[in-house]
Image 1: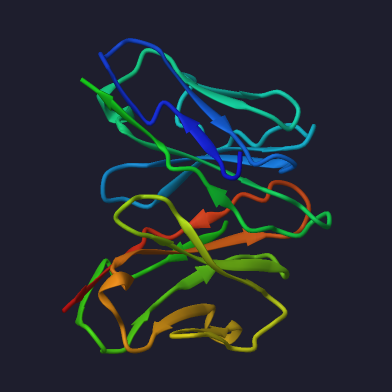
Image 2: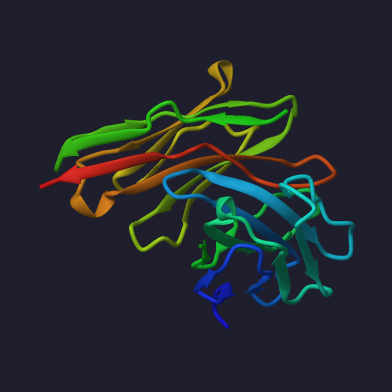
Length: 117
Length: 116
């Protein structure tokens, strides 16, 4: 597609359930990011994938959070045993790296709004 | 550690006023990038500008202008003759360009409301 696609756009779940959020980056973009945005707050970095390099997981808040990416395609963010504080918009972004070491513009998806009851 | 501070949480102006959004950053890197993003009420972040740490020239794009000052670690954003459509949350961000992870570190954002 033309842009970053995320699904579901909205997810309501009960506390304790697992959820899976999906991100389809722009074709050809080697870098993929997950951010979390709580209501009225800034963007909190979660995880970064770059090609086949080991992902930077330094932002994952707990071991209930995990993410995978196959090659340079789709990524899945999984939250196990959800808690109410996990309620937020989860934003995915992708970017290209024309030259190694140069940060490219991030293109964001519309986000997946997660509500944990 | 990298950090971005946007001290202004909310700003409210009347249409046609000029408004400046402040951004102060901290980094130990010698080379880095600075960004501004706009998040309108619809929610999707929109890229506005990227600036390399070696390029301190100010930039103007229509009603938007950016003032990058390495000496004060600031990258301020000015909207001239603001319009209602400028109402949004604006985020300043910082990334490293040296090896390793290139995650963007965002400030907490400044909510701008432009009233008619």
